[in-house]
Amino acid sequence: MYNRRNIIRWSLVIILIVLVFWQVWLIVITVYNLLLGISDNTSFHPMNLSHPKIPPIIHQIWRTTNLSSYPISASYVKWQKMYPDYTVRLWTDVDLVQLISSKEYSYLLETYRSYPFDIQRADLARLIVLHYQGGIYADLDVFPRNRSIEKLRSSGASFIVPRSSSDSTVINHILISEQHSKIVDYLLHNVSPILFYQRIFLIPYLQVFSTGSVFLTRTLEQWMKSSLYQNNLLWILSSKQVSSYVGHNAGRSWHSFDGYLFNFINDLPEIS
Ligand SMILES: *[C@@H]1O[C@H](CO)[C@@H](O)[C@H](O)[C@H]1NC(C)=O
Ligand SMILES: *[C@@H]1O[C@H](CO)[C@@H](O)[C@H](O)[C@H]1NC(C)=O
Ligand SMILES: *[C@@H]1O[C@H](CO)[C@@H](O)[C@H](O)[C@H]1NC(C)=O
Image (tube, helix red, strand yellow):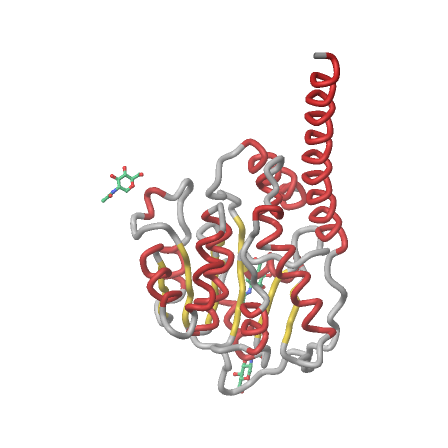
């Protein structure tokens, strides 16, 4: 019948428009946040403490202890060789679930499990291991240039985070933190599960940004404006400073087409 067909047709059109609008809206918000970046935090002035606040531990994360399954040559051995006097710890999926199931972190378990991508779990896990023990977290494609990163441990900072290569947002391929840092504690208490209506199906990779870089940027900004803010705890390194400490091989561990595209775009400034 004429009417019934029309109703079905128009309903489908409206549903389609709503779906597209929903996805485009999420993409716009995420891209907006990426472009907005983080304000300048000029209040941090490095000190040279005789007793470093940050312990000599390097944390890395992979699915298993089999590093040959990592897509490129992993930096684990390089960290071990350059820092023989440090503990270099590789956290596997099993170790992480065990830690997050413990009493101290069990409030994060549901969120951890809600993430659709491994890389999102790794984004959260690095904050948890840093909170738990303190130290230096480095992605497996991040390698030490020399021991100069060591002096950051004595800087007096509670949490040290790098800017992205565009110097707008902050990123998390390398993070440095004291144990039980108030800032990391704040971050962990502001993590929330990804709900269905927040899923970006059109460009899944953007979702990864939203739990990694965008989350870190927005929540640190929020912390700086909150009553919990304290001078001289947060140090935001420029991309230039970061690249004098560590190199980044950009061998990311996800393989969708948009992932490749964003890796490529993201790494352009570093290629030159
Ligand atoms: C920090 O101070 C110690 C002695 O207190 C000194 O040996 C070291 O070179 C200093 N480091 C930096 C980076 O200034
Ligand atoms: C480690 O991973 C590689 C590559 O995926 C695989 O070929 C190898 O069999 C694995 N080794 C072990 C001991 O599981
Ligand atoms: C470490 O490497 C960076 C970049 O290669 C360089 O600028 C810096 O001076 C080096 N530091 C030391 C202590 O060699």
